[in-house]
Image (cartoon, rainbow, N blue to C red; front, side, top):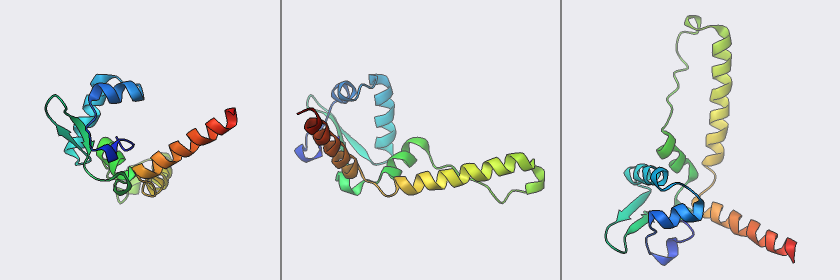
Length: 129
């Protein structure tokens, strides 16, 4: 949808599913969640489909991840003695990994993904020439 944004034309589920090799039913669920999260909007009618609500450069990947996966609330202030030390240490490491992943997702937008994809496609073309 990001690559198609400039056209202003909505994409139908079957188009997206075919291009991305995603089952229609699963894609319907993803798009419904993204619609509720305000990232995409739907347009009814014979020329209907889905569109991004904002320019791809204004949609941060973390927003999409947060919308699809939900924001996990960690309660690190729980009583450490009530948990086994092993579990607490593992939980601390997972929280650190989660913060690192979130930091990366906050650096990139949908536009960045499109540019990276286009750059790789260009390299692939050059490689085969």
